[in-house]
Image (cartoon, rainbow, N blue to C red; front, side, top):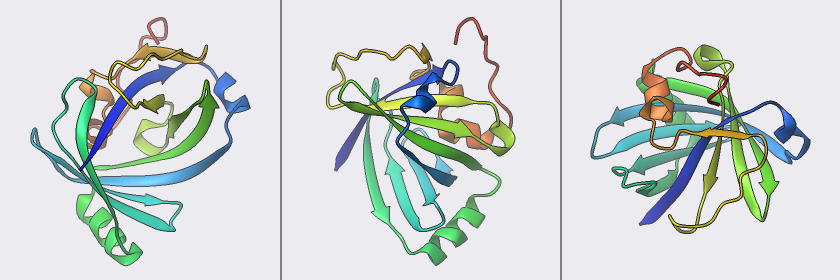
Length: 161
């Protein structure tokens, strides 16, 4: 069993783009979103697909199981997940010995930009780059599963970002 320890933030401006090393296109659909577990299919650059099962959130941690699946199966699963699908481009941005994942959303969520960082420990110290804004780790509106179910960007107060 794997454990995901992740913090999520809104992004300020475009300064992060200067440090971005590469990016991938992602389409991900949610086959099930319950308090006990989320089941997600993700297609990356139309070349690779992962089926992910995530357990309930405890703080910023949760159990995570991820399996590679054949592309034909992934496309069928993504169709089954519709309309609960999110499209985004993920950029990888190294900073302070860690790699931030900056998601630039497309489609129904165009304009939303969030940064995620996976940590080794829940109490791990973290220096935030200048482009990192308000933390939304505990705000369910910004969970990808919630975004998939709710078209449109969650209301963002630019001064609070």
